[in-house]
Image (cartoon, rainbow, N blue to C red; front, side, top):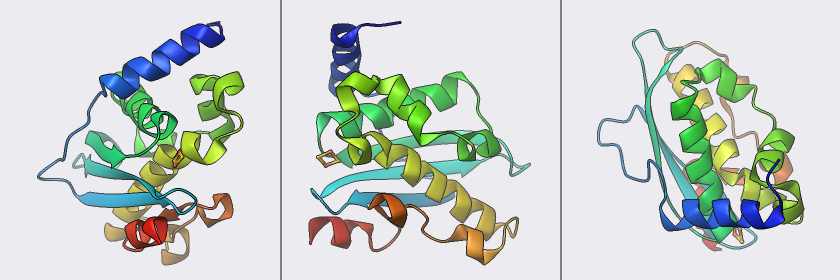
Length: 160
Ligand code: FES
């Protein structure tokens, strides 16, 4: 298990050299997520496979603190390297995300640590809703309970 210093170095490496950080021109869903507490933003670009279960490509853009942007990069890498399905991403646990980033390092910043995961989940729910695979009630902007905002209001809410 990496120690605190190794976790910090891993975060800094992802912050300085983010993986899969680019816009995706042919994305099916473009989902912004914002943290109103600080104004930081992560935007997820998601493209689904023809079976609507697998992820063809997923990328992000963003601006914000080291933890939020490094977490987005680490999440993208985990999804790509693990070839995770949409269902597997939806079942990813926020606490596991904090553990992966180093609980000691990010525990006091849970919103920074989970902004990308919450936004990716919101993007997947939007994708599934667009393809009539989940009811509208499940497609909404869950995440409000964590104080984060997803969708068209995200940028305005984060910056206000
Ligand atoms: Fe804004 Fe971290 S301080 S997401």
